[in-house]
Structure formats: structure tokens, C-alpha cells
Image (cartoon, rainbow, N blue to C red):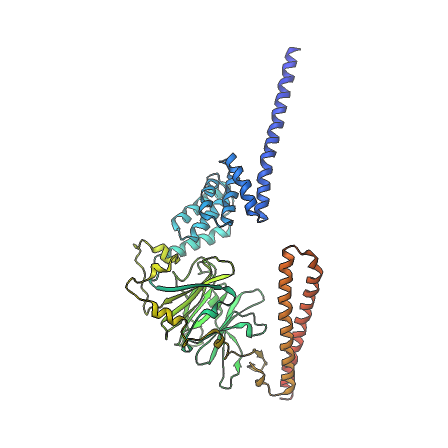
Length: 479
């Protein structure tokens, strides 16, 4: 009996221990699940408090360390995020290596990025998993970054300003000889971004999206009578598999700066340079990425060089200020000169962490800075003056740009009606956007109103197509 009593006691103790272990696992799993949910719900401050407690209790927990690092990064505390992410990487958390590589690339720490990518690859192979496309993209980005760091151009950035991203180009101050940058909002329905018009008013360059949202460059000649010829694609190859956007043509009429986010971009939009081909068939020569410090792992675009003022401009969102871009004003040089690889500040110069590092200590930039906002440079309001009011393709090889182009009163009246409907659509879309913001903030009672407005939007767009056909028909009938 004593034997059986001991056996029974042992089994009861073992069962109790097993239950306690299960409860412990559940208890330990629940907090991490709660913290993960807070993280994915973007409640980062709440997630941070839970994750800090979890890591304090279990310092070697790879999952807890990973989400702690990811949360710190989401809160903008990237330097604090490194230590927990490295602990997670040591515990074999695959995403930790990925994020650490991303962070290293963002700071141009190419050797660190290489190490983290290697750790990611090793862990994936150990778990017999196929490498994701993101790994290949980051490896290619690392290679391009190494190459660019070998040839960082020596330029003097004399000023920078943070402005609203939506109308950044209005802050470029270009002489009339450099041409104009014009809002594409003046082109109803085009979806274009910024339009460039040279001093001669002989042509226009812009970018417009296709049905997938991919942008391509378009160009059109402006005739002596002010009408615009049928827009034609500039060169499909300029996108290099991505979007091509933000064109600026130098005064020689041949050299084109623009942005693309294709296969040779470091990240997002990069600034490229190409030239018009003078060979048979026209088109453009193979574009070249102009490298650093102009380009970064973020979006860099709209490089414009004014040969009259001796100043160049470009925009970038590398500072990662929500809704803003940074405009850099620099002194262009006739010939490219790169910083020596031995320069102790090479990475900072490439990143433009401080524009003062680019300054010549013996130079006085006050006169050049005064030119930026001088009276003889084009103000944003002046840029609009020569812009066509609209572009209406009449189907006969010409595009009307103002009501004065119409020869028939019927066509002119139809165009006025069409433009009125465009205004109605724009106001509806503005209201709809505001409604959606309120809905996202919790006003779910707006659901029916939003659905009604979306239906109205579809009706207006259908009516616009009918009116557009009426414009062409009423203008060209009998001619």
C-alpha cells in the first residue's frame, strides 16, 4: 500500500507540475500577444511599457526583444532600438536582421548592413527557407550605395528649407531664362505633377500616370499661335521599369534632369540625367544616376539648375518630416569633382547631415543667398501666367489650351460646361477626403454619406466623358 501511495503521490505531483508549467506558458504567452496586438494597432507607447517589462523579466527572449526594438523604431528612437534588435538577431529572429539592415542602409553604414544581411541569409538557410525578394532588393541597394560612396560629388549647399510637399516647387526661385515650373493642377484630369516650360515657351514637359499609377514623361510643342500639339511620350525607357517624373530641361535644350524610381534607383525617386539624342529617331540617351549627395534611400527629385543666378535646386524627403520635403540650394560646378575616399566626413557629406560641412571656409555666401529671393527671379505667382488654362485634345493633332482657341460658339459653350463639371468634381473630392479623415478618426456614422458621395463621383466622371465628347463634336462638326 505504501508503494502505491508513493506512486500516486508522485503522479499527482507530476500532474500538478505539468499544469503549473502550462499555466506559466499561457501566462507568459498572453502578455507578448497583448503587446504584439498593441504594436500592430500602432499603440506604440502602450506596447512599449508592456515590452519593457517583458524584456526585464526575460532578457533573452528573442520575440520580446524584437518587438521592443521595432516599437522603439516606430517611436523614432532608432538608436535605442539597436540593442534589443541585436539580441533578437542573436536569438535567430529573422525580421530583426532585416530591420537592422534597413536601419544601417538608411544611415549609409554599408559594412553593418552587409553583416546583418549575411546574418539574415544564414538564418534563412538554417531554417531551409527561400530568400525573399526583399533580401535581393536590399543586397542590390547595398551594392549601389557602396558604388555611390566611392564618388560623392563635392558641392556647396548654401541653404536648405523645409516646405509643404504638395507645392514644394513654388519655393524654387528661377530666373526667367531658366524657365518655369507650373502646377499641373491647371490641367484638368491629367493627374500630372509639375510641368516645366522653357523661356522660349516652345514646349512643355511633364509626367502623367497610367491606369496603374506608374508615371511617364510627356512632351509637347507649343506652336506660334499658342496651341499645343498632341502630347507624346518622351521615351518609355526613361522609367527603367518604374516611374519617370519631375522633368527639368537645361537651357541648351538637350540636357534633361528628371527623377525615376526604377531598377537603378538607390531608393524611392532618384535624380537622373540624360540628353536628347540627335540621331535618327530622336529619343534620349541612356540615363545616368547622378549619385550622392543628391540621391538617398528616400525620395529625391526636381533638380533644376539656373545658369543665370548660378544656383541649383533639388527636393528630398530624406529628413522624414511628415508632409514636408527639404529643398536644397547649391552651387553647380562645370566639372564634377568628388570628395577623396579618405575624407573623415565622407558619410556625413553623402547624407547631408549638416550642410555647413559642404561650405568653403573662405567663401562668403551672403550675395548668393540674397539671389534666392531677389526681385529678378520668378515668383510662384508669375510662374502661372503663361500656363495654358487647360489641355483639350481635339483629335486632329492639336490641343486647345484656352477658350479663345475655339472657333465655334457651340464648342466654347460645351467647354465651359465641361470645366464647370470639373470644378464640381474637385469640390466633391475635397469634401470626400475630409469625410474619410473624420471616418478614420471614428465617425462611423458617415458611412452612408461617404457611399452616396462615391456614387456621385462616379456619376460626375461619367458625365465628364460625355461632355468631353460633346466639346470635340460641337467644335469640329461641319469643319
